[in-house]
Length: 103
Image (tube, rainbow, N blue to C red; front, side, top):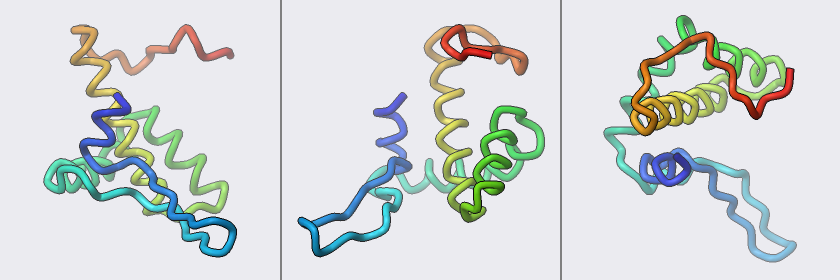
């Protein structure tokens, strides 16, 4: 899933040179532009109808992060959900809880 996010150009890249130059982290944009644009447009709808994506979006905006940054996080979540569905072969279950997540 991480490689797929990197292929789409949604992974953060940190620009830093020693201790003097510290740029803000941004998405790499080195990947497939059409896929990235499509995911960004899908993230608007996902924030309304996908509970996991809505939770991420609301949590980041409540922390004071920008709405655009929160939408990029939703893009990552959508891509990871699609990868998990394709890899497992199961249908999407909106009530699914990972065994790794502690309640």
